[in-house]
Image (tube, rainbow, N blue to C red; front, side, top):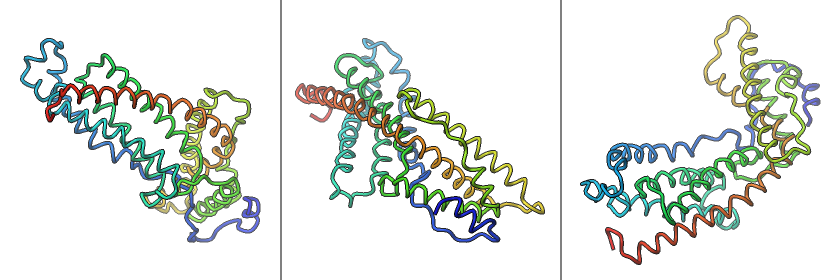
Length: 316
């Protein structure tokens, strides 16, 4: 059913009704932040504690009492390196989860992506702690490649979220997106008691054409759409609150829900128009991301192999 049909059959909802919850991921809980925040804070506090050691020249660090702990082969420094290497190997399980369906028992792909990104955020910090914030030789190459992988992962996550998907990570078809948008309009109209035709006009902003845009221009337009969506949602919420009859107090749960639904509705309108261009940029990102990740894997593996063979460890 298209929005026009909804407008003809349901001009103004009389009371809030229960409507089926949309099937797409929308703005899922920020699991990535929750997974990486506590370990990152702990590592940062550890580095702040040893900042005096890290500020010393290399030839003076050896005589520093903390060298046995914070040095690259020290208890803390090398443990950070081992953990960074283990997490880096763990990152390669995510592509396997995406490729092989029999691994579905391990969890949905979006949840794996959250864990994948959380680990990617921690690796550069752990690697810097292990290296004592000194990057030379092959470890410098490996660290630089890992840092680029981390930065490109942020871009990849952003593009991934621009493609509407189900909770299981399956991309929605254009018909499914249209049905979900109709569902969202009905839900918002029921929550706010607003005429659905006004909702259609208010929450269907003009979206620029994405045809014949280059990769950089497409990214700029996607970011501009995000900014415009926030402005449109804030304006809609302001109008809705001002139009509430009798000065009725709107509960925080209702405000939060309408804000979420309105944001998701406009996002789908923007994503539908930009879907083809987003796929094109995402494909280019995959081509650039993988060689950097492989370079980092080779450099870090060689570094670990040399350290183990030379027995430059506190446990070997």
